[in-house]
Length: 86
Image 1 (cartoon, rainbow, N blue to C red):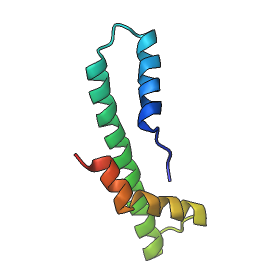
Image 2 (image 1 turned 180 degrees about the horizontal axis):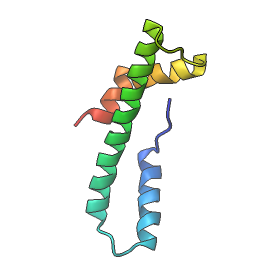
Image 3 (image 1 turned 120 degrees about the vertical axis):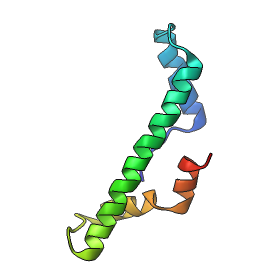
């Protein structure tokens, strides 16, 4: 499955980013990053759902086992809950 920063790593990233761009508002950046992460995850979930459906119906084969495993990982309820829970 895709890699995500742990909270401490994300905090280091934000701190480093803002150290170079001190004119930016931290709260706004944090909200924007949260929305972007959800959007990217939604895109991944949508693509993986389509890929698994296409493979199951014979419309298009999944190229290898790793791709199938990664696609299933994005549809795992634990992953979905971690990304989309409010």
